[in-house]
Amino acid sequence: MRSSNPVFSREGSFTRDSGYAGFGTTQQAPQAGGRPADNPYGNNPYANNPYANNPYAQQQQPHGQQPLTDDQLVEMYRAPSAGPLATGRMTLDDVVARTAMTLLTLVAAGGVAWFALPDANYGIAIAAAFAAFVVGMVVTFRRSVSPALILTYAGLEGFFLGAVTRVFNTIWPGIAIQAVLGTAVVFAAMLVAYKSGRIRVTPRYTRIGLTIAMAFVGLLLINMIASFFGADMGLRSGPLGIAVGLIGIALGAFFLSLDFAEIEEAIRQGAPQQEAWRAAFGLTLSLVWIYIEMLRLIAILRGDD
Image (cartoon, rainbow, N blue to C red; front, side):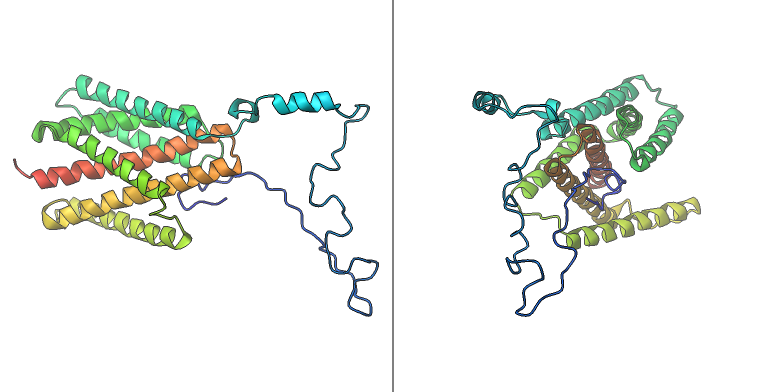
């Protein structure tokens, strides 16, 4: 399965070889009357295989091993079904557990930055943000999953967010709680909308969303470059800033819907259990995006109060 989400689109991510075989790839020349040669059953591709509809009918026993007795079959039937530990496949519980670990690491690192970082020195926070970006790119483009790298990203990103949130909360007291609650509301709303079928992740939906996201990021880059030369496009203040903030939050919600679809498809395809860490990383990225945009939007709405 291929994803439009860059986190899930790596080769080997959430995929499993299907191993489906084709039927009748070699066509035989028809005889008079329209029936293929040497095929007394006409055009029925399954006619030569009396066990075609029963994949277990011709199971081969290992060399030297006797067929199972009736009592052994009954015992196997009564045994508990194989769980994720036995199959090694990813489950929803795995995703929830890994996401909780990642978010707890992020929050803990944010708490350290909030209480331990000096007011006048935020160079460490900026360095942590840059390091988090580098680690995040490595995780994104790495073929194999590395829980250590994902937790490292969460710690670095959390440290940066803790420092930034403290600055915002000093100017606008209570904004941290408001941003956290707003992020939680967006997450819950998107989860309900996705599970209820109100939002369907189709190719057209994905293309439109990614196009808007690329345009949004491009606009922010242009604004950042313009700010270096003293120009202000007004993207972070006033009515235009509010519109940009709302679009940013909507894009974060869009990324969440892609994450939900990828997780659901990965579980359906029987992805390896280790891939739950990749799902946790994708969800964390989306939640961090929403939180930052929520923080900026609330700051604009509160203004100078």
